Length: 241
Image (tube, helix red, strand yellow):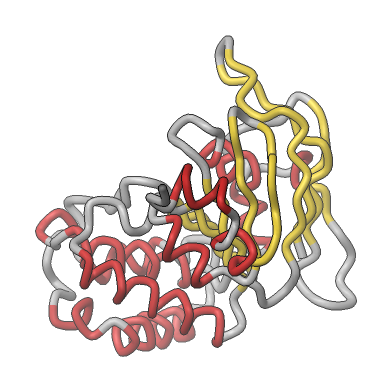
């Protein structure tokens, strides 16, 4: 579904991504782990068109039989329309808009009003707390509720691929488990997921495959189970001795 080929990105004076190449198959959850500053957020921002690579290609095929498209030549809004939605780090809800208005904004490229309202109702059924908080401003929600709102808002664009940046950041452990259960359900509904996550243990447990990013370069990849059992990964990210 998605393929990065030798992608280089500079941010200011920093060579943030150094020849990153990775693949994501349709229906997978793929985790991207690494230390702070490794380039994980930069990778997601480059895929979604918020940053432009200096070289390399990002190819996206929304479904079987559909031609690949080079995302490096597309505007961010066109990438959303092609089927990629991005949940940024820090949640970034629209503070003064209601929960329902936040959800509708996720469908800003659509004009099928009846279908949009049905999808709002479906999202609120999937996340019952959003239905009970429907008229509250976004900034009145707890951190976990805001994360559910951001995921729901992203799903309103009907993505084939969902990019998630640190969904567990700042959440209590029981809420983290709830968010990861939601991600598993999203995958069952047919949405492919690329997950950047500080909780490497849970990311590797959930992910079909994973890549390890260090200083802008990919240094390891494999199944989530393989990497979870790797002594170097255990020492660096899983608290192993």
